Amino acid sequence: MTASSTSTADNPDAFTLPNELEPPRAGAWLLRPIEGVSAALMLAIVGMLLAGVASRYLFGAPLTWVDEAVSIAFLWLAMLGSAIAIHRNEHLRLTLFVQMLPARLQGPVQAFGLGVVALFLLALLQPALEYIESESYVTTPALELPNSWRVAAIAVGVVAMLAVLAGHAWRTCRKAHLTGAAVLLAALAAGGWALKPVFADLGTLNILIFLIGLVVLGLVSGVPIAFCFGIGTLAFIAFSTQVPVGVVVGRMDEGMSSLVLVSVPIFVLLGCVLDATGMGKAIIDFLASLVGHVKGGMSYVLLGSLFIVSGISGSKVSDMATVAPALFPEMKRRGQKPKEMIALLSTGAAMADTVPPSIVLIVLGSVAGVSIAGLFQAGVTVALVLLLALAVLARWQARHEQMSGVKRAPLAVVGRTLLIAGPALVLPFLIRGAVGGGVATATEVSTIAVLYAMLIGAVLYGGLGLRKVYAMLVETAALSGAILMILGTALAMAWAITQSGVAQELAAFMKGLPGGVPSFLAVTIVVFLVLGCILEGLPALLLMAPLMFPIAKSLGLNDVHYAMVVVVAMNIGLMMPPVGVGFYIACRIGNVSPDEAMGAIWPYLLALLVGLVVVAAVPAISTAVL
Image 1: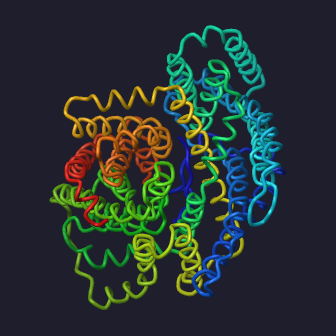
Image 2 (image 1 turned 135 degrees about the vertical axis):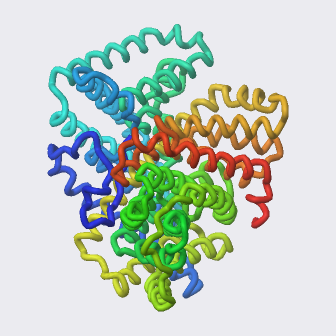
Image 3 (image 1 turned 90 degrees about the vertical axis):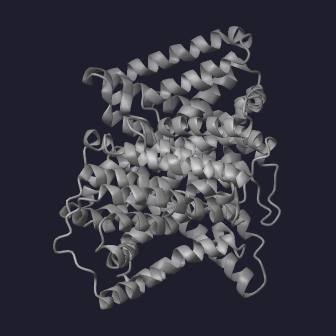
């Protein structure tokens, strides 16, 4: 899979994440206006939300039109950002199996993957245009605008993605490979259409064929996860049901349009600001002055930094890219092996993903109907349990650490670093306290946090130039588009599974497991460990949460407790080699070979699994603070 991160290092190439293909120059003329519009939309969203917060809390007069205007801009940002993500090759995808193929086969498989994306987008275009027409009769209550203004973003985004994809394919693939892929996909589509009567008689077996088999084929072919879900759902509906394929557009719109999700791009932007201003580095320096002189001290600093920084950025990738370049040189000097450092970095990032404002928690709260304030409160406690498990192991691993020349930092140094880090340290407490205390929503807090970070960054940490701000806005649009496209297609796929009746059969099976709740939690852990490895975090959650949470509720499980078990299991799977993408991201950030680091990570994963079992067995860890 691919991803990206804003680097804090002087040499960005040392810590940026790898793309299997360089971003194509073809179609750059098209991307410039798309990037400009996306940056403007991001600014407009932040500005409107800030205006709404100020009007509500300062003047006691809420602006009723803000939510509608933000909803319109948000869908446009998601679709245009998805086109930018195609251009930058930032859509999450599994590349392990493609890279294992002989070089002569990789080109045709790559062309096939691009063809699958193009086929999905082409199949979506006509329904998207029809959706505009159907929504033109709906008027928004506050602005009194046709809803077609908002949903037109889907059709425009599809066209933009097709145009960008064409330029990408033209530059990176041989024409013979593209022709072969087009012929193969046309033959598969024709065969599916011809076999519709056969598929209609297979019933729920079509789930295995289309929503599992076809999706897995796409995954191993390197097709981005969002489009694997999309093409599987479209094929299932088109070839095995009488439901019009236009329903996919409606489900995607529903999945990407929740106002709760507006906080996702804003927290992504906050992570960019954190990296660019050096606020994260200030926090790390303060923690190092406190405990850096003891054995295992730099490991404690790394874990503590991930814990605190994650409370600002909300992104694992941003967390790791901030912490690693600041700490790894000193850890190497003390004799720690690079593979041990990567193991601690990756599992520490998995631990920190329950710390608010985790984007995973925000999305999970939206799709599963769980209180985001409750998730934020429970996430801190759960992360502390996992932090303790990792810290104990890190201390054992550092028992032979070379401490010659290492001295306790003078109180003057501690005080100076605290003074510098103080404004940055306020942010995580501001976010957790405001949301957890019910003072403001996650979206409102995220906008205030961005404004605070930019002002503090400008005054104390060197500020940001206009060119850098523009780059961060475009990067935010791309990452948000990639996340939200997964969200839309995954919810469409989950809807198809639910409508097929499989969800009800799954619920009956899970309720009938011997052992009751403990057995259900054990199965949950195994399922999300495996899915976390294969699908990355968000796709696994989005696909399974609508199916699993109703079952958990029927068994009497607290939804916040169950959410913590699910998120921790998923994050551990994300870091599990040889498939877990988070592990490879950590290796690239730390510039360490995955083969070298693979053997060192298992004790740390075991420590996390022990912590997970404790969290699952003791619900009070998650619920006592609610």
